[in-house]
Image (cartoon, rainbow, N blue to C red; front, side):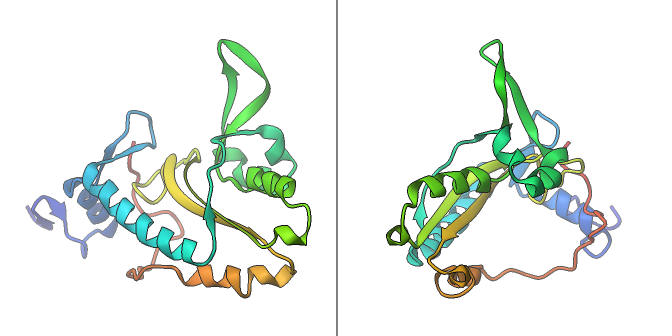
Length: 203
């Protein structure tokens, strides 16, 4: 077939098609049962575990401690942060009923954890002696993507987020906080299409 190699479109012919076909042909992923979700197959998940293990070692070497925060966040937490509501409103998944009853307050399925982490850090920090506080979380988040793309933008995805509190305002950008910016692994740089020409998968 013209432009195909082992059933996969040539990268030089159509980068988006090549990428989408390759991750499926390589057995990294499959489509999930709900629109926009994916199943990370064992081979793909092994790659994730290797990356996570190496990054976690580097992150904890800087003094960060791992913690885990709830998947369900009271909607009022996000409403306190106007920027969060404005930025995430179209992508939020909201739970309004549980146990056959309507909830007193809707719960947002975590799009990011900073509101709840900020709430808990404020509770745990009572003086400068509690600082710095360096927290790291490995978790899944949910954002209702209009144009999902496998591994790049899916409804549910795995990620890492670090949150820190310091004795001085600039300690987050100098010293402890700055070191985390150099934890990236070598990766190829590809010119992206900010207009969203990456193809739509999974469905």
